[in-house]
Image (cartoon, rainbow, N blue to C red):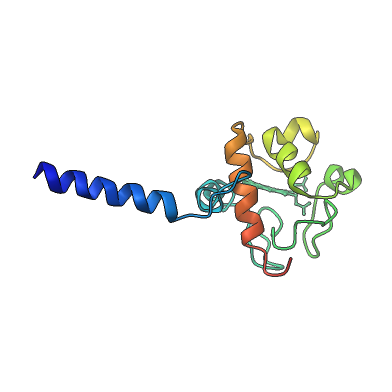
Length: 128
Ligand code: HEC
């Protein structure tokens, strides 16, 4: 009993160790879980907008330019180029980073969550 318990613990440990694509930057698998908070408003399908714009093709995109989505003036005027750094800064405190933008999201205060969700966004890009 004790023995098999220990054995399954070892299996769980091994899976946790090898079963995901961890990197110094972020863990895409953990990022998929963080992305659940974004899913209410964002898809990763090109051109499929919800409350927020599709995040397919977001890297290298200028803020406020996904075709077919109506952005706030603040987002369009900012003309931020979205990359790992700017997305992380925006996600930490959306309203402070870009006052009057329309994303009703409090932010991801934990750095690891930001790194993970960005790793996930990279993985979810169909062409990069
Ligand atoms: C309550 C809905 C909502 C949630 C939750 C949300 N967003 Fe947004 N997001 C928006 C809206 C709306 C905009 C456009 C804001 C504007 O036009 O001012 C936006 C804009 C963005 C942009 C800029 C896109 C562009 O094309 O310029 C990024 C990047 C982004 N969100 C990432 C995220 C991520 C990652 C999460 C989860 C951690 C998230 N958002 C959670 C609604 C949301």
